[in-house]
Image (tube, rainbow, N blue to C red; front, side, top):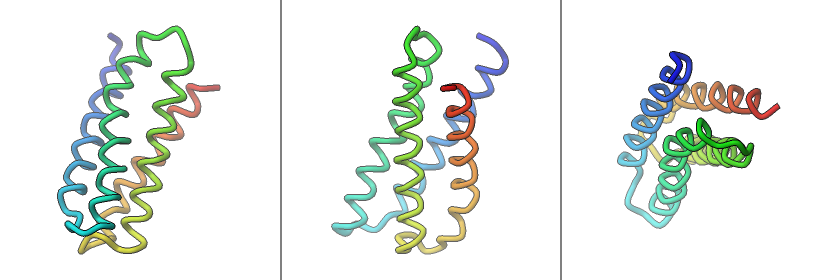
Length: 110
């Protein structure tokens, strides 16, 4: 595996861990539980999908990973806007990382 790939894998792992920590902060309400479920599905697909992207000949895995990142981004924006966490401003850095990862995967798609 190349250093670039190792760096991206570590970055996606750290990203996933951050998102899981946010999920744990969401309130146990109908809204919080629903958004948490959506966010868990999208972020827990992103990290493992990266392994598939590395080995796949098809762009489909890359497109799927990009789609999951965009879903994660939208969930984070929703959490921030409502807000569903005590300190919505703490989401700024993770949203910036989400934007950066989307840009990276979108560039790979081209």
